[in-house]
Image (cartoon, rainbow, N blue to C red):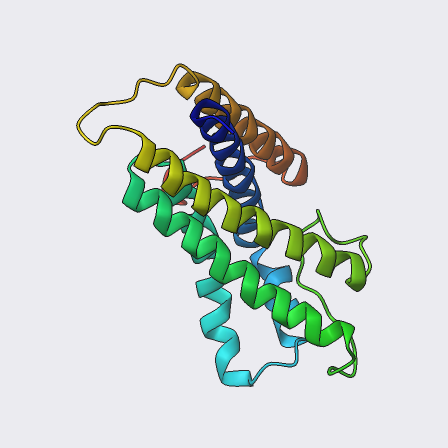
Length: 190
């Protein structure tokens, strides 16, 4: 496989993971009450729920943001974050599939709500493999490039447009969920 194809695949993987992590992280942040209620249904120690409640959405959003950077070290941190999150979620779901838990509660985003746990496990393993492949291809494509040469990418506006459209879709979704206007700063009139 030549270096151009590898860089296109690596770029596509990073876009897929950016969209995925920003979507699931922002969805947990926006529907924080549902996320908190579902955490109380998990087979987790009570003391850990408050930590997980804040930590998981922040790490998911941070992973998506890190993957959007062009700098190699930041992007690699994003890939490692993706690998660690997916490994933890895959182990959690794998334990549910083999019957370790009495019931199978799930705090999954709307993407996975309708999936069975077996299919959820398959999707998580596939995303984990994609993350590992993205990390590998990111390293390979950066090793092939000359370290002092700056790569000019014509696809950066496409990534910006993709993220802009994603943001617009999330905004429109929230406007439908909350049709009334509310003041961000209650002391000021709307």
